[in-house]
Image (tube, rainbow, N blue to C red; front, top):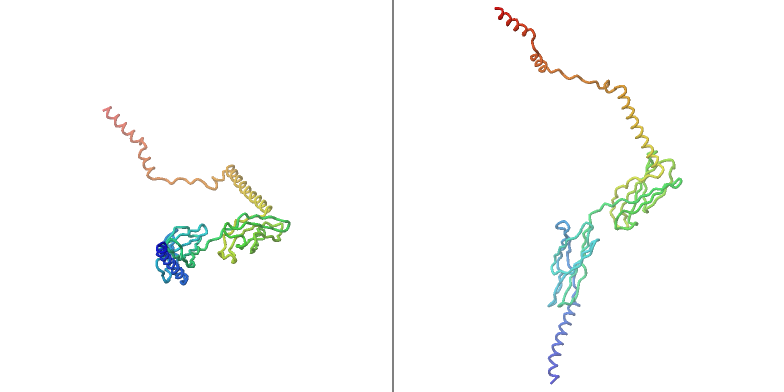
Length: 298
């Protein structure tokens, strides 16, 4: 009796086993192709749109297709799944990004098979390199040595090439040198004054931008810089003394009146006419008084 009850159960288990075996065999015989024509678009600032075409595969029965999306930027990495062949995300794009998509077959809740990754990149726009920082200049007898730190960037020091502009402020000559290290020493005339400027450029070994950064501010060697400050102070002091002396001489000899005499105001004929009309006429007053005396005598 028990054997008769067990027979249908064993038959059902066999059917399930054969079903799973058939599906597994179907997946083993089918090569899952990766998505096609993966593209990256920027519809608006700070937003990226990924789109691709589904791969053409023989479709086993009763499975679910999902896409695994991986987006990498220098700042962060984001991975998620979707059933659509388009997706968009908001993120910083000024450093560029790399997007990868693969197709996954699910049987129920279990992953059955996945394809290889389809890959696309969004390159960052050429970014200007920052100038070197912390430049120091030191005299060593008849040598001039300069050191600096690499620009503020994610790349290591070997990824940069440097140009050094050494100017002789006495003769007016200049030297332009190119090095791949962050220090340099050269022979100079110890009596002259020098200034050093450094700029950085990308190195081909790291695939950096080939354009150069801006020149750093000029850095002077120690003693010539003090001499130039003293000379500048002497020039300003001389100019101030000349201005004070000129002011004293102008006040003493009244040179401003001689050099800039006062210009008389122009004559106003209307004003003179009004003043003549308003003045009393003495002759007329006397005539009137004489007439009054004659009338009284009569």
